[in-house]
Image 1 (cartoon, rainbow, N blue to C red):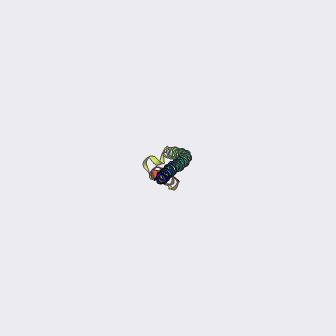
Image 2 (image 1 turned 180 degrees about the vertical axis):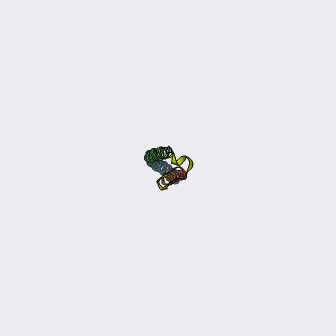
Image 3 (image 1 turned 90 degrees about the horizontal axis):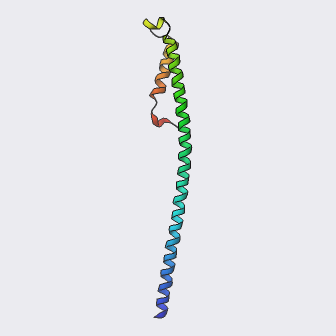
Length: 103
């Protein structure tokens, strides 16, 4: 009977140690995943900010070019010529892009 009690205690200790080690392994995997996610988020965030700055700059340049074209007296009462329509269309393309199209 004493041997059975000793085996039961040894089995319980082994089970407890295995459970503890499995918890440590799981925690380390979760930590590694969280670190990878944080690194990816920061790089994606930096790329997104750069892309948004470039889009804003392009939009400002298109608006500025369009304003210069519209200052010509012919465009006050007449239709746009080819270069004017190119600027208008470029301005529409910049402002019409959806937010999730960033790569």
